[in-house]
Image (cartoon, rainbow, N blue to C red; front, side, top):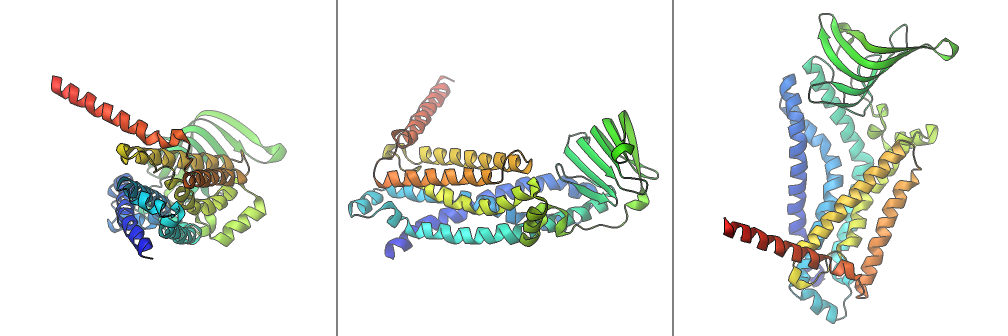
Length: 385
């Protein structure tokens, strides 16, 4: 127990500091993006604090595994650099026994992250979306979040791929469900213009579809305007949890998966289960990526760890996108996560046996040599100048 408390104490301080730092950086970046919206709309500054609060569940799902992994790397590298881990190993302790308390924390954190992913995250997404709607209503004209279906205006659904610095939307889809419709518009780009009577969506290079079956009519256009009377903007129309899969409760999302087998719903269902398991995957990799020759220090190990984080999260993003587009089965997301976990456990087992792959053991040494050569080159250049 004394060893467990000692190891846990060495791990906790870097974990807490890393969690605060990484979360703070992400929140600061998001705040900068929302700052212009708050300023332009004249919304109370308290709404910005609410937005930051409601986005926290998603950031926690990202930052807790990262902070845990880097602090565990720091723990193992520190014990190795101080030769403490050599003493423990010579007394017959396994790496699993040495890290037992931290592995236990990984399991505890996994349970907490699972609860956040399944229940708190969708509530946060819903609240975030509704606060945005309040801000857009104060601004006087709707804004559309890229790659999300939006119904800021009653009976009209918008979808845009993105928005450039000039305020022009790209990849526009508009469904006009007002009496006499529905009418569908697809355009390469569009601008939202305020008029005396309301709003106007001025679209470029697209197609207008109207009617159904044999009565369907299609019109290709270079420019086309859709006018939205100001009276239709009305009061704020709040979202409900059933409006989009990212805001659905677990029971609603499961029903959506079973009912229509929509790829987007399947991808979201799998994502909520997979995101918390990332901390277990990273826990398995922490030991093999932290054991390096003592003279190379911790730099090489941390660089290997950062490389793993970038690779792992990018694989998750790519697989999620492929599943949500219907290009592959939802189990592909699990296949990727399980493959990472098995590789991490295999490398941990090899570390217990003292048979880590040479390229992994020498990885930190390579980064150490590169780091030293860079320092010598900089010192040489400064000396000449």
